[in-house]
Length: 255
Image 1: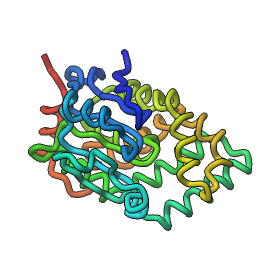
Image 2: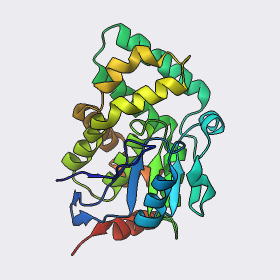
Image 3: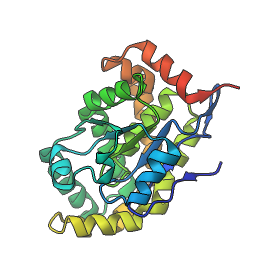
Image 4: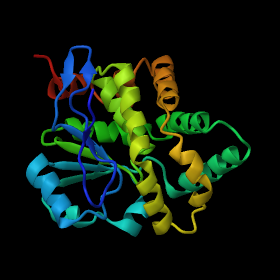
């Protein structure tokens, strides 16, 4: 199963989630993309996404503070539609960063530390994830690109939810998450430069090792145990079952 990377100058973790095996077929290309932050895209990058890919909708999962500090970049000057949902606010972001740093310093396994944090994201971010899903399924909601700051954590959880809701095989969801590890080094370095006082440098070694398959596999197991899977998770958080059906129709090619 080949990875559909989209190589850009101003973002490093951009890929099209088409071609993944699902229970009733394969996911269609040109429907759902994932990425790290887009504020440093070049004009050529924008042309690639809008002109070549046909991007119509960006789902920005960053906090309001992150968005105000970094902005949308040049893509914000195009007709592309934006949905901005705050998965967790700045206070929770700071709390989680400190807790993660302490756990790493104490020698806890990075993959499990990140996995526990993702389970918390499922809980804290449920309204935001459900709203993002509704916006993607709405008319004109695709082709959609989901991103946060790094494109691994908030983006990783929402992407896993969207793939699971579409019936993508669990092994393929896990493999997609793990591919982010191939692109982490330049993203982290850029993040450190833009956030010099965040304490992120102390976490770099752990972060570069934590796009681990077992991390998202644990999250998917908890998702099944607590909610019965992503489809039921979205319904439990206010989305109609018809939206899940519509998502599968749009994203999965049954031919």
